[in-house]
Amino acid sequence: MAFTIPTLTATSRWLRGIVGSAIKGARADLWPNNLTIFVKALAMAAGQGNLRAEWIFKQVFVSTADADMLDLHGYEIGLSRKPASVATGQMVFAATEGAILPAGAVIDAGGLPFATRAPATALGNSVTVVVDALETGPLGNLPAGAEVRLREPWPGIEQGGETGPLGLSGGVERELDAPYRKRLIYRKRNKPRGGTASDYQGWVGEVAGFTTAGTRAFAATPAAGTVTIYPLLEGSGADRRPEPSDIIRCAEYIETKRPLAATVLVIRPQTKAIPVTIAQLENDSAETRAEIVAELLDMFDERAFVARGGETFPASWISEAVSRALGESRHRLVLPAGDTALAAGEFPVFAGLAVA
Image (cartoon, rainbow, N blue to C red; front, side):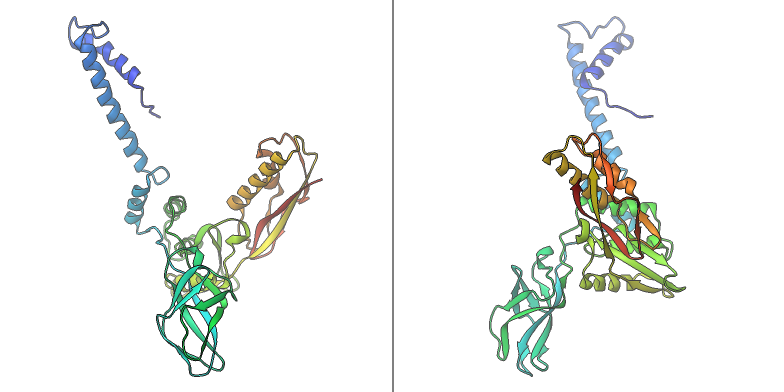
């Protein structure tokens, strides 16, 4: 049965009402009266106790616990908050053969400093080095071919270079409360069972930048003993699709978790663009259209998933999202005309709104 904390006025009124039964002939509802003051003080003390009990009750559940209590919930099941991490990857510089770039050489890229992890010797006309950002966070994540520059010259090596063919990845901030809360709830609902689909999805969520939401793992595909994983990053829309370097990071982590007999394939999902066209929109205005777009983006982020093959993305979800928008009173969904078929590994994303 639900319990609502009474107001101080209600508590004080109740206490005044029972004074007469506790002390024969006493009245706490008449003024001036020291019992009235005593009852008010007692009501405030009881109110503080109720508030404390309410706080304790909220901390019992992951869904309502405060941030510091979330960490305690995670500690009890061995699922800690993902720490901030630095971006890593390869950089390439033109160089004369045999030139050496030492460990610790500082390189500026994307507004952040990087340092070479180990010395590297040029082969042919270039030298390739593994680097780590000197600061945590996503600013260090750079695409392939991004411009970089050595902070100081080194003999036989050009100061200007570029990121390697896989780019730089892995830089994330410390995990925030909302995604950490979701991971804890997922773990409570899906206890480890030695390699089920939910286990693989949970392991993906433990990798920096990745999430269990929408991630899919399929057993026996393409053959018995094989598990195929299509992981997704935290974020929104097409940005949730991991880069090749992210896939490598994810695969390396899953390798430390998988059952010994399992063969694991970690594959980059392909986006399936779904444009939306509506007609007969009433209360058509720029504000209403903006609200519709916002609702569609939220719906795709919440409900989109990587398909196994033979699955569909329901048109009813799209129409429902449009109907939720503030200002919309009616509409007719023109496109998609029906449920959108999804091939294996496809991840549906919102591709814009048109009003006919």
